[in-house]
Length: 272
Image (cartoon, rainbow, N blue to C red; front, side, top):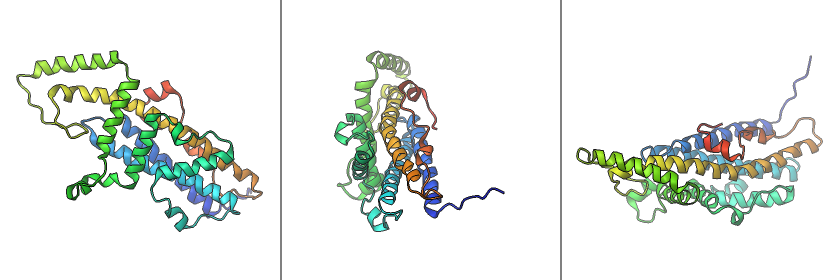
């Protein structure tokens, strides 16, 4: 009879964390892919899941690296709590680890401007702006509205990544329909920046957002790919520890769906 190895608690807990990380990131990307001005809830769901998934992924790297360097001891709750939900600080800590593991995690200043802005948005959301709507009811100092922040990112993507020809076609179609409805329609809607929308804008923006969010997903995948490579490098150290049963799983196996292929990512709507 084959003897089934008894895995340590650290392996099982990090395995469960891997499932959680994968679930959060894939749900976030799927929700983002379907988000637009008339489906604002999908933007919030994307932000919740992507911020949680990114934070926990980066913390998993830090924990495993700490275990390798400290005879499999894990960092204390106090040490982990010191990071809070600051994804930017966690990213920088992983950058320091990357330099010791010969992987190519880029520093934040080397990220593309849109990627960097998305990372800032996720970090802000993880720390404070997820409560923006409630805080803004009672305070004028509630930080940047996350939907308004997304609107800025979408505007940048439309300027840099979506052709004028494609945008022009969308505008022409929206204008034609709005003109046909002009005598029989009143539009009462607000954009991501809470500004009132005309009928033409209400018809135009969903199609523009559909074009922009698929590029936003591509930027996020490009950001995650080197993080996946780093957690792979850190996880592979399990094979050099001289123990009969690994203290942590191969965490990159939870991220095998991250393919940095432009055409694949742009046409994919559901993740993984």
